[in-house]
Length: 301
Image (cartoon, rainbow, N blue to C red; front, side, top):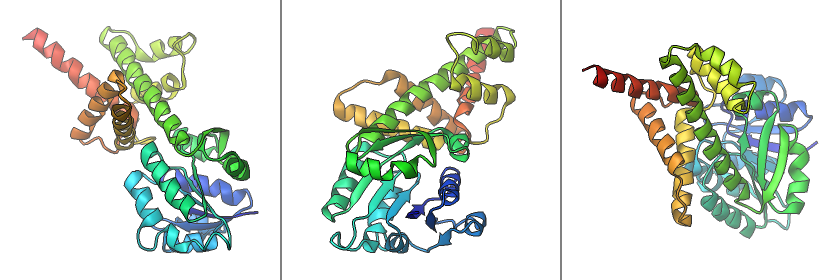
């Protein structure tokens, strides 16, 4: 049994924290929107600042939207670092499970390490369904000794827990994941839109493709959402666009070109311009439909 702090209890963090409580751990919880009552009913304890969570927990986990949110929770007034005792008293472990900048992650890790405590970046893939079913893929950047210590905890939330390398490597892996997934979602949207405009039932096309080389989780899950017009998140477009912004910023620093990623980011930006920040990322198909309808009208004029 470990004393675990969990900060950030949104669509992903809430079910993740629930699995840790059911796994027999003591959970010390904080969320800026308040701790859900069902987690308290299960035995979780609510605290009103990250500092208080850090004072009570040995392992402090964060699941937050973006890089500035993590920095604020860790280092601002009443932040996690204010709740850390000198490392001679007890070495604690901060585990950030958010999807944020790899470059900033390395800076955060260095600041925590200077205080004598351990830092782990452990972003996840699998969306809300993976979080609810404890089936997340967890990509870890940490020293091997630290990874071995926290791996049993991570395994309560994920079906695949892989140490990719040192601090920052987990975030690099997550960005690589987002590059692949975003391009796959856009490709599925194009394929189903093409089928529909050609007068063929996109659901039957999807079923056929799932039996061949084009089969994928994206085609299975996001393709179904596109066909059923079910755009409740899921994974919000604004968050996926944020990840692609990070990817392109890092790529620019490395001198790497990511042309497909840049295109998908622009399509996500168009979704945001049409009020789609909170849509599921499968709603990229709506922008492609608008573009297609525009082209059809041009040819008819």
